[in-house]
Amino acid sequence: MRVSIIAPDQVVVVDGGALVITMVLELLTQDIHAVQWYGDFGEIEFATHWLPDEQRFDRKPNERITDFSEFQKYVDRWHQAKDTLMFTWTPNEAGLGRFPVKPE
Image (tube, rainbow, N blue to C red):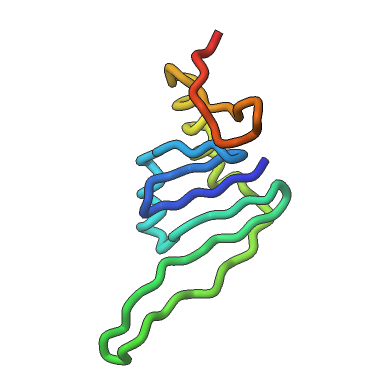
């Protein structure tokens, strides 16, 4: 499973499907900008801050992770939100873009 969680945008992307999940804003309190998960490892991307006295931006280096359990609740919420959608997005036959398909 490939996951991107982008806190300031309130977006969770699971295997290419993006949904707005507002609860990810809570990650900002931990100085987390984004989380990337590649199936068996990932990384935490930290927020960038302006340091006015030094006239530069600063950011902690990304942190490699091998345990996604702390972030699984956002994927669970993504699945709940996806299940309530009236339409789902699937590739069209030509493989060009996506179009809405009403679930059966």
